[in-house]
Amino acid sequence: MKYCWRMVIVVTFMMFLAIASSAPSADQCKKERRLAINTCKSVLYGRLPSPSCCQRIRVSHIKCICSVITPKLAALIDVNRFIKLIEGCGRRVPHHFKCGSLTIP
Image (tube, rainbow, N blue to C red; front, side, top):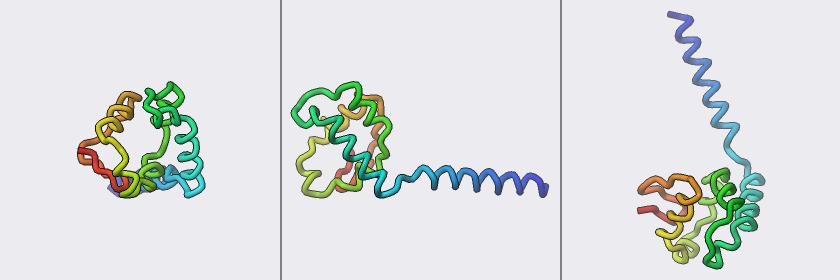
C-alpha cells in the first residue's frame, strides 16, 4: 500500500512539473505574438490563412495570444470569422471559452 501512494505522489509531482515547465514566460509570449502577427498578417487583409499561419495557430500558447485581447480589440473582431479561421487550421475552440475580453459563443 505504501508503494502505491508513493507512485501516486511521484506521478502527480511529475505531471505538475510538466505543466509548470510548459507555461511560457513573458519573453516567450512576446516572441509568439510577434511570430503570429508576422506569419498571419494576410488574414488581417481578409485572406485565408496560409499553411505557415495555420501551423503558427496550432503551436501558439493560447495564454500568450488571449492575454492581449482588450475590450477595444475585442470590439473589432468578428467572432464567427475568428472561430472559423482557427478551426479551419485544425485547432478546436471550446464553446463559452473566454479569450481576454472576447467570449466565444
